[in-house]
Length: 296
Image (cartoon, rainbow, N blue to C red):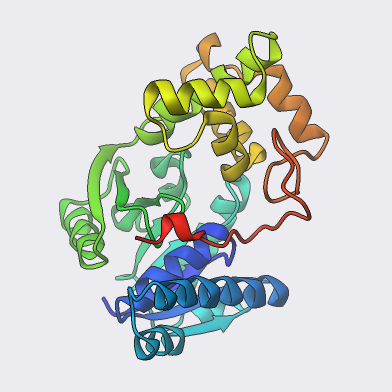
């Protein structure tokens, strides 16, 4: 596989495109919004500049990576001739099903269709295609250029051959793939999101304040950032969507989203992307720049 299409130029999509391009793959970064494509490419450029400044890559390597990326707003054109498609659109089941239905008709039968979903059933996504055996989850962690883990999620019909090819591809990106099975939230978010939700409940019930909760988890449990700051970083709307998937999938009250989380999302307080969540983030941005502390 040398030609990759990435659908969605937001935080995850541009990060995935960055990693593939830096490793020498030809990448079509696809988004219906030209503005989103412009911002996504700007984010990639700024993150590459930070790597150059820290002498992690050369200026020539930066330019090569950027030359490997094409920005395209038309899905049909973007997926033409590619070997792998990675969908990194919003965590919305209806949107993802629509995209995969279209991909099934627009790509050759041998093309693997991957999704970066962090919680939605791979089997359900695969069911709207005629190639369920070639649909797989490829869940990158944020920030993608830095985080080593990739959760590789097999759907009910995903073949061993497809799974191993994606595991091998992840290793070629200098990532560490971990194979997991298709259950709500997989491993990462089945464990992480209830913790974040419980931190929000702790705030909601007045047990402690925002900075106090985050300080306890950072100093007491050696977390690099507190759960409320992390929720802002992920996006409170994304956190809510994942908790709803867990709650619907398991039917267990312990996965019910905290009322405070629901209210904040309803009010548009989504964290970094909106400029305000549990913390104030100024003007806000949907395209996070990987800060110096993450570039290693």
